Amino acid sequence: MRRRLKWGAATACGAIALALVPGPASAGNSYDLVIAGGRVIDPASGRDEIADIGINGGSIAAISASRLEGKRRIDVKGLVVAPGFIDLHAHGQDPVAERFQLLDGVTTAIDMEIGTAPVAALYRRMEGKALINFGASASHICARLEVMSDKRCGPDVEGRLTADPAMLVKGATPEQEAQITAILDREVASGALGYGIGLEYVPGAGRREIFRVFEAAAKTKAPVFVHVRSRPPDQGSGVPIAVAQEVLADAAATGASLQIVHVASTGLRDTPAILELIKGARAHGVDVTTEAYPYTAGSTAIGSNFFADGWQERNGATYGDVQWPATGERLTKESFDRFRKEQPDAAVVIHIIPQEVVDRAITDPIVSIASDGMPWITAGEHPRGAGTFSRVLGQYVRERQLLDLPAALAKMTIMPARRLEAVSPQMARKGRLQAGADADITVFDPATIRDRATFDQPMQASTGIAYVLVGGQVMARAGKVTAHRFPGQAIRSDLPH
Ligand SMILES: [Zn+2]
View 1 (cartoon, rainbow, N blue to C red):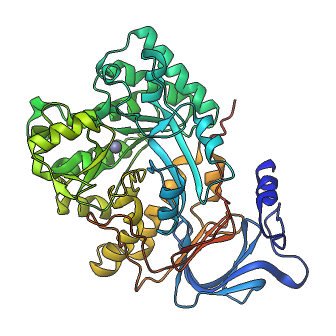
View 2 (cartoon, rainbow, N blue to C red):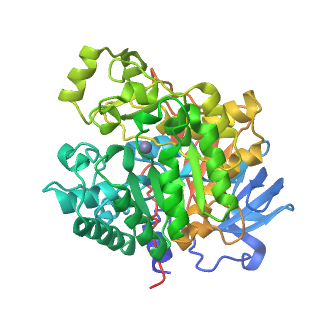
């Protein structure tokens, strides 16, 4: 209730009535806004029909195949009306990143992989200033800094992977493990949406330390999101799925919920085997999910432990596969060493994921879509932060016909919403087009939607998206963002005590 009232107070347009209880409109059957005549696709219910959507305040009040009347009416005939896209892997919790995501149809963007701590600082920084809904997990790296270093995570996300290189390779004592877990629990209790572990970046984190985090997660019921460890060098090019087996074992042994992030970029050619492993675990009752982005390159900080000695062998890569976004150049040993030393926080693009691996992940029914978008610092970061969702709809659905539209939309809406519902009841009103759901809505032309961000020119917004509504407000229209409105809400955990 408090949340809705706050939203009403922040509404710029006084004519928009506040609907505290979603339901049929009152006298005259007139809604605040009607999105009229589009092809309404709600993967959660299977609805796929031409219909009108009546919106009151921030909520969907009615959906009907017959005409609904509204104070405002937007004709979307010939367009698809979908739930706003939900991105659970969005590192750019800032105005620039939000803008590109909004224009890609995203209405909720959360950093579940690395997260932050204290999350209260992030929520304070974004509250009242956000175009789209936002949030983060409790960061294992930040908790480790608090326990094992004099460095701290700030309210921004940069530098988390490189703040204290010595800490990242140091093992924790049992006492320190308990302290790390206690900090993560404190963060989850204060709004963080789960436990975010970037294991590849923290080679010092032992298997027992991670198991303790899963034990904690099983108690709070908040999910664990993991970027799995570096591939063990002794497994060579066989089937190094051991890194996924570690976290699956922890989930199975504790009952914690797990999402293995960006399965294609860490699985590489073993992605099919890792997907089999995940499906097998699911069939035996383990709550595990996974995600991918639709690009053949990854991206991370050049100073991070992804590039610890042996990275070429682990990933089957060379210096020439690494691109320096500021200039577009491919690196050599000399330029790589120089950048790694001088600008450790700068993100590079790593062209190492075979196209067939990306296709396998994106089209698998258990894999949801998540961008792994980075903050835009050099203006040359990976295009995934601007084009992920339109790229799936343009390429995989329309051009290559590898996915049907409702299946693709499920991966961007109800699948990520369900992943967080147990920890945040707010998510039970998102990812759906149903009466009572939040009016987070993306309207696009299936014949023209496409990504425009490329590796050479990443800061280009997607096209073919007609309208994006966040909390009932039209926040984007034909590629233009509405000025001076900030309907984005903090998505917080709300756990039973
Ligand atoms: Zn990652």
